[in-house]
Length: 355
Image (cartoon, rainbow, N blue to C red):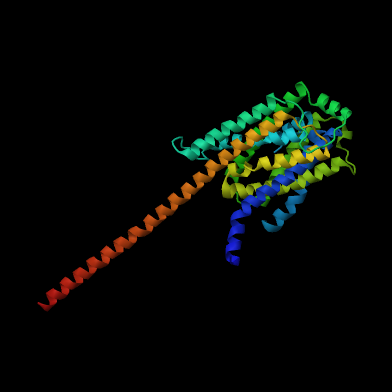
């Protein structure tokens, strides 16, 4: 295999590698943010610091190379009332919501008579069903990673995540997914008209800082909540700002422009698996049977959607290639006919001249 073939493979896999890498970044965010919120940091303040850090991190690159607040707050409240593993697993419904919204806004083609489109629809239904199962059914604790959980920690976690708070937290996380999907749809339209991803990311983070700051000043009256120290609060603000806002928004906008909003969201189950492992090992979180079963159903439904989308893409590519081939054949036939006609006329004229 030559170097040219290797370069072509890397270019084709670039979008996949970028999105998969982001899942590792998001997994770290789930763990760090969960610790930060459990220690009492206000979610409004965290959202503001996240956008400010992201703006400071990405703006210099935008100036050098190129001359969203609601969904985050909903997510942070949901994470506070549930767990890092559950929140990351619930976000797996994001591709289904994005697919539905992309279909409504004609960013995704659906033909019910074709098998790929049927697979995308069935996969979407299965994904939503898995998310509903995770919400309704919790079941017994499953200790997959062999993590030792003390009785006091288990009782505290169960009390914190039981009853009304768990249901409310789930609704907040799902509301965050709707806001996130709407962001990707809007981003898909924006990058077509404004293909300067760094500048766009800087503007998104700056506006998020301004809007989040106004909301936080209204909702958070205690100025002590804005205090930062050398602890999990500073780490959460910097990490989420640089990795999960600055870098993530830029990578997502680039991939969104090339592959569309549905592709950007299809690898979220990988984030769930990483977060479940890290949450169980680092945070000693309780993993319930309902979350495991629901996560498996979500993954199956999700990759049914991915399979249908890949078949749609290959069909579209084949059709385009065939159309180009036909378009190239027609002028050749016409040229041959024209040449033959001119030759015949020239021969006839020569015959007349000889006569």
